[in-house]
Amino acid sequence: MDNHLDNGLAVVALVPAAGRGVRLGAHAPKAFVEVGGTAMVRLAVDGLIASGAVDRIIVMVPADLVETALALLPGSSVTPADTVQIVVGGAERTDSVRAGIAAAPEATHFLVHDAARALTPPRLVAEVAAELRAGHPAVVPALPVVDTIKSVDAHGVVTGTPARSGLRAIQTPQGFAADLLRTAYATDVPATDDAGLVELLGAPVRTVPGDPLAFKITTALDLTLAETMLARLAPAPIGPLS
Ligand code: C5P
Image (cartoon, rainbow, N blue to C red; front, side, top):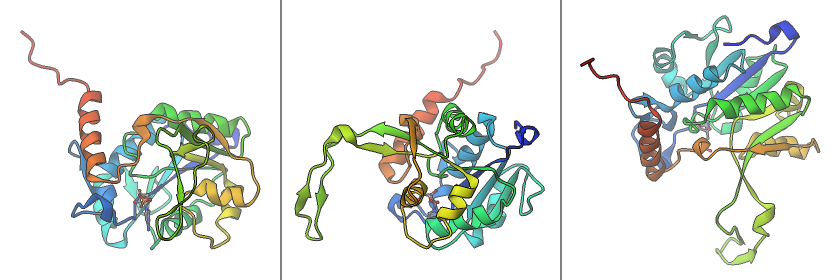
């Protein structure tokens, strides 16, 4: 793993993996469900390490799965001494991210990356980190939206149709100057993504092109897609020499 501390930067990746993942319909919490024989959280952490863009990784997990996470993630511990640190997450995703922020007082930059985006290419992680190093305080991967998106009221009746050309689907890793994310999380406003909290502070959020492989594994259909893609991406096993 690259060490950016030499130039005064400490890029810390926060991996929220403490969700129960009921929409997936699996028995284990989502981040611990296997894709191609490897737990999603392990795939996500391996991708962060492979990016060469982070100095330390903090993984937030359910309290009853700390030991499981330690066994799944090589070189991990519950102390900041190791590259991969396991901490206990919270009831909501924001609580989990807040726990990760608190565990990294040394961070100059954070990359917040959902364990459920297990197939995210390391190149995308490196691109977000590069934009942070270039001085942008908040950076998110974004993809054009393929469906028409409508707003609806509480009864499901359509209230509006925003122009699709101006909409983007946002992925992770989301990158932030550390103090900006600390300030954003000092409030207790619920949000489905971290950039949403930063936007409330009026900070500019830059987008970089996302990647279809960074999709969030949420439903059983997503899991099937992830299995298929991982099998295609994996190098073919080396057979016996003839
Ligand atoms: O539920 P959702 O798909 O939005 O979760 C996104 C990520 O946030 C997942 O990796 C999940 O494990 C994590 N999460 C968490 N703590 C929670 C809820 C979700 O770390 N309380």
